[in-house]
Length: 312
Image (tube, rainbow, N blue to C red; front, side, top):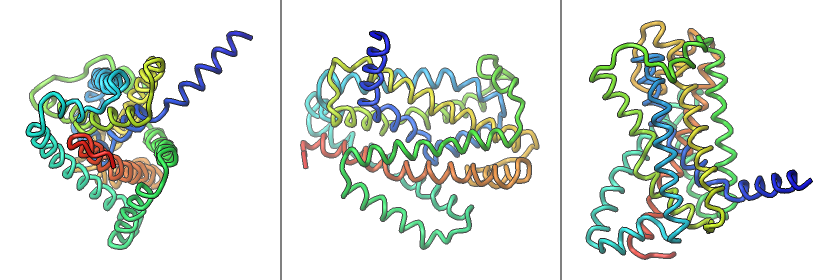
């Protein structure tokens, strides 16, 4: 009975801290991330899967550091930068962060546009409506409601699992490729691997998880549970990345096709894995772009308020 009681208590604590690690990690798989994974898999196939485990480990470490800093200090990363380096450096860092985040948001808007076109919707009507919905929802909803909404959206990433299954890959080779390097490692491969790393470990993600944990008021006593939540989020998001790359490899790479983005991948998957697989891939892109369009501006707002001491 004591074991059951302790298990339930720990499970409830884990559920209580659920959010920062999970949402930040999955938001890293935004429209740009889906595009990068798709292009990498179309170019190198199963060979690129070898990079996933090291990238997952790095993501776990960096996200844990961000969460740990917030829990121990009770301050956001931008707060600490301002206090340590002053307002001038803060202005410079925020300016650079704003430029990068602006580009990421545009990338996600482009992903939303492509996904809407895949489903036959007029993006000139539905894209502004989606953006307006996001703005109104975030500015009028409670913290808890927003958190639950994005945790719910994460469930739709299962579309990539279904898409990968429909693509009928060689699962043995795919799983072996996670730990056994295949093919030659040249400059082109390393360059692409760095791009995959860069789309997973993001600048805005470090600011976001730090501020999110601070806002959630997670205490040092719950540090080990938040660490576990961060690790689970990092592993699950890269499992999604695995399925994205497997789906693309089994269809596009195996047939010698070239693509330029996630929308191309969704279209190219259809002839080989069926209409449903392409639509599921497109659904994943839609959700990824939607989450990215929400979380990256939130990260920017967090950083602005902390860099300049605004608590509104």
